[in-house]
Every structure is written in C-alpha cells, then in structure tokens.
Image (tube, rainbow, N blue to C red; front, side, top):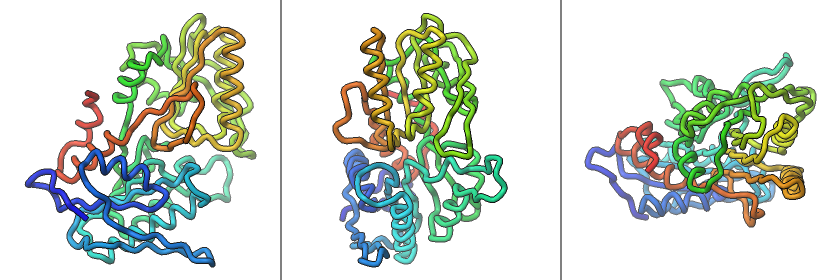
Length: 341
C-alpha cells in the first residue's frame, strides 16, 4: 500500500479502500488520484453473514471507503452491499483511522425520505444515516442525492453528508456531445430546481411535468401533465433517478403529444431495473420509425456493460477524485463542482 499527501496541510495520509461491489469505480477514482487501493478482504459465509478485513495499517489515516450499492455487478442485494459497507466502516474505526468517509455515489433508500400519505412506514433514508453514524463514519460523500433534506438526518456532531453536484460538468459534456435542447424539462415539480440549473447553464427555456403517482403500487405513474411550451422544440429531459423507466416513458409520451421534436434524456443515477431497458429500447424504435431522435445519457455512478448505441455514459470518476483530494487538503468542494474545465 502507498499513501499520498496531496498538500502539506492535508488532514492525514490518504487511504483508499473498497468493498467488492464498488471495486471498479474505486479503482478508476484511485487511478485519477495516483493512489493504490489499500488491500482488504470481503468475506461472505455460507449462512449469509459477512465480514470486512483491512490488510494494512490505517492508524491515523484519512480513510475513504467505496461502495456501489446499486447495479448488476454481482448477485448481492442493495441491503447486502450496504451491510458490508457498515462492516468496512467499523473495521476502519476499530483500526484507529483518523477520519472515515464513505464514498457512496448512490445513496440507498434516498427516495424513502418522507412518509407519502401512509401512516405506518419507516423513513429509511434516515435509518441508513443513523446506521452509518453508529458504525463510525465521519462523512458520507454522495452524488446529487434525491432530497437535499437528507443531510439533516445526520447528527452534525457525529457525521455529515457531502453532496456532490454534477450539473456544470455534465452540461459541458452534453454540449460537446450535442445532446442538449431548446428547452429543459423536469419530469416532476420536485426536480424543478435542479432542472432550472441545467436550463441556466444552457441558456434554454424551462418546462415541467406534473406527475401523479399511485403510491399504493411501486414505480407507478398514471398521469403526467405538461407545464410550459415544447411545441416544435428539441427537449432535454433531466432527472436524478431512473429506475424502471415508467416515468420517462410517460413523460416522453406527453412531450410528443405536445409537439416536441427530438428528445434527449440525462440521468444522474441510471438504475434501469426490470423492464427499463426494454421500455427505453421501444422509445428508440418509435423515434426511428417516426423520424425523430432519441438519446439517453446516464452517469458512471451506476455502470452498465455493453449498453445499446442510443445510451451514452458520462464519466464522473475524475470529478470524484478531485473532490476527495479537496476534502483531504481542506479545500473547496464547491470550487471543484463549479469549475468545469
């Protein structure tokens, strides 16, 4: 293992380590930082229990633990991967690490951030925050969390949330790829604030869809109503999470009904589970048959192997590497987010 001080006033020597599910992402970030990963071993026993062992001294180190809880990189569930992250955090704490940061690009249960009309359900986003605090984490670094209010679910005397925004970097990349539009559309009013940031960066107009959900069923949208004007215009539809793609399909149907021309979709967390790929492929086929263009962009926060040609991946690992270096050197994370070179 090698350690690296990024500046003389760094908090402590950096130690990067990863759970197995986050290894590919962690290796790419580590490469941008010029660091090697601290050796570690993840073990799963026949009964379903797991443990995490650190293979080098991290006493007094500034430790960053990577985990990718979503995606199809293995047969584990989100909950299995999260529990292994807790094992890793505790292992670092018991090894006398100076600081412990969980690098969790997709925050699990971030959509379970409040009660949605039902009286007997938990708020899992807060539960996960408390569990990481109890394990010994000092900071959780995530990317564009679903609800900024989740930061308030951490006890600031124990840990806090570092929420990294991609907007300026992603917009610059979208421009290079010619995947923008005349109008930016939010799939619901809840994402309107972030959509406005995209519109401002692109000097584009803004519109939104009012999404009506059936909360008695998961991933069920039964109506989308457009607020704004898209007639004869190219659309950039932006969202933070796309799971089964039902909302995206509903949104595209409404946009086409309202006269939109070409439609590009940009998503921070492309979960793309269940029927998502089939639904989006059907949209691409429809676009080809009807003579309009459809492209989708997802970030490498969640990677997908061998995607179709209508899907493009925006790499975030270099930005995450810069953020971690700023944290270690007590620099400005906001400056990294805003400086899209």
